[in-house]
Image 1 (cartoon, rainbow, N blue to C red):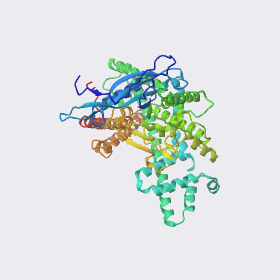
Image 2 (image 1 turned 90 degrees about the vertical axis):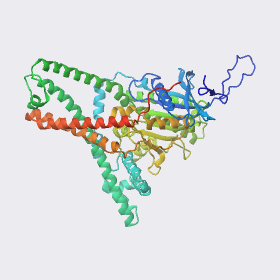
Image 3 (image 1 turned 180 degrees about the vertical axis):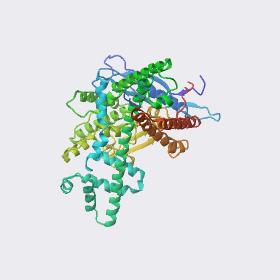
Image 4 (image 1 turned 45 degrees about the vertical axis):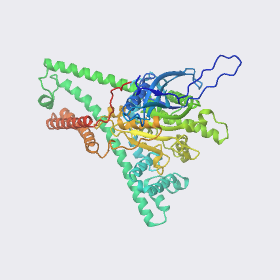
Length: 608
């Protein structure tokens, strides 16, 4: 063994097994402190232990490219079992790895690797509790019914959906941090707009009533002018967000309809029954009712069948998970699934917290798993606060809730879930307040314990990922900007939604934050290599790709309408071809940028 590979385990404690029960005192077991990472997977049908294996691999590969004398390397991976500390009968499997740091480095750059910490990775595996035989068409109908959310929001008065409107205000405040005092004052006015006194003065709850409420609570004309101007900007921003979202939903529907209709028209155009001029002259490179047209029709049929099967599987395995988790009606069978998912998540967290050797817990949630992890932590926090208020002795997992140091959410849809699946409004302002309070926020345990900040929340997101976003709905107030640390973590210079959603754990910006928080316990220092949102690709190429894709969708839809009803559309066909070429050019530019400055770290395994 070379000196580079030699480790110093003299400081590491060893566990002394107890001997048989002979009536004498058994040898004491030396404590082996460790940091626990509890990982909650995303939606779909993952295999048990597959996701924590992936996370272990990514941590190991990332550490292999770091300086062993500063952050260290990860070695000595073991897969172990331990008895459950909760009511569960099954033993709990986990991965244990050691952090080795090179100390006493010599002039030749070599030195001894010293063990400076142990890490255990547990899995919050909730997928079996979401299993069902729910037909795909029921999931599709449920999903389509959610897409009317922007219309519902726009049709309700300004008083309704407080958390949603405050999230917009918090986004504005994040862009103008110097105006925190004015934003905070406007936030207070909006919260009191829900009170009985304000309801009597403005029973309709409209925006004009809110402006009158603001004016009545400010003494000077200058204060009123400033606050009213900001309130109107807030409303404009909110309306713009809702209309943009509505337009994107319509565009997605138009894209799906255009794709299916285009393939169907291609198939019909291959026959002699109906072939619009644009298909005969531009879109079909061969004569109709020929051998090539028959082969083409077969290919179109295969593509349509593949699209249907893929959509069916996606609805049954992915969106069904969302359907179960977001169910609010407690009388439905789906709500039982939600309770089972939450119980499984709370159980694994309780198991980890009950171990006295665990000195720190980092919870990592990916995609839908981030919402489950967040709700599970709030559930434990509510249990702790309810018992503490009555002066009762807390169970071990609740008494040790403060060792949860971080919640890391990657690709989190928490804001999207709140918008599409959790909107509510009642004429009873007390019901609104109770529901908002019980929903929880960053003012609740474990994020705030006894009035002091405790668990830190770090959110990884990418604007190319349509599922994730910056998180503002869980915030208790806009005044505490550090309640959730937002980290923009792109995995590519290109606008690829599927890649963006799955790249957080092998992108340099994302894994750097996860590694430092989980292994070292703090945020990484800023570096010049971090991508900038003001760079040319992220500032221009991505937006242009997005809007070209949107305009291409509507161009194709207009082309199909012209072909069917007016037997025209040749000009639109050439415009669509030009848009496709422009998209290919932007994709090629993004791919070139990825090669010159990759945002994904090397997948080459390091030497053992």
